[in-house]
Length: 358
Image 1 (cartoon, rainbow, N blue to C red):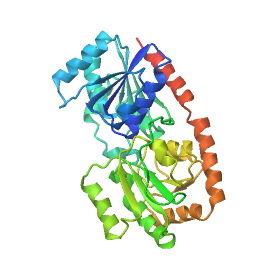
Image 2: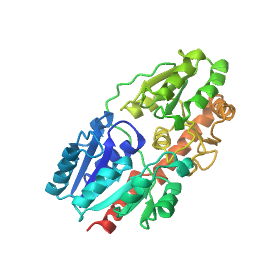
Image 3: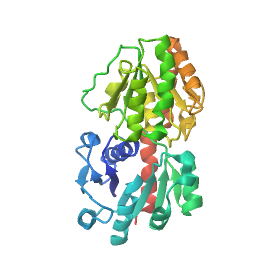
């Protein structure tokens, strides 16, 4: 079995980390594991195992014939029989399927706005889905959508898993040890940093020694500007720190005290699993499949989205109770290890591959 993970970039996003995790995990379990980044390289390239064969297409446009030919030849020469396309890479994967009809094409749906599926563009995806041998989704809402809207019969939900990075520690956080709150989320509107910062204003007024640390890609767009403007307008520059994309996630989490996600919409966020592996107590909004990770108050606090008062109250409970923080972090750690393990996910994935390989 020779499997190619296909992803459009290697920026430090959730889908990108899953693609790299799969490629690395499969390397010693199948005949050959490959990863191709179609449009852009990024921080995650250094996380790729030496046992994974890597290809970068530097694709410039939708119909970049040079890139398409390069990928087609790569698949043919290496006798790859399964292409596992993640997120938006499904289009070029569909072209490769037309050129190489004998490959099995698996599409992995990481769509993060699963609360707003009615607004999802689907014309091109509907056409391409006729070429998919199987769809893997990161939550059950997406599974139902693929079955009902795309009309694909072979669909399965496969929970994400996180792994502890071995990347060399390079990031040193601002603020005091034991007083840091972290949010692992790219600067996108669906992650709702504004509600998080509204809540943090309450924290800062009561406990000025606590700081907020935002880790994730900064797209330098209108939303990013709105976050930075809020920080400046509310005099939070000495309390809220933006780091951009960072590869040494577990080094960062080891310096933090509480993990938080204030999203309006999610799939099954990898950040929650990473918080769990790092034994952090967590406050997260009850969106997507977050409730599958945090199923009761002993594993963390699930709150309604877009409610800064409730978010502040939950954070204050942790701030005021060290013993609770330790116990909840421990419980979430055990939950992640037992339910969202790497071994279980990869075993299921290999079975999917075996079922559909030709």
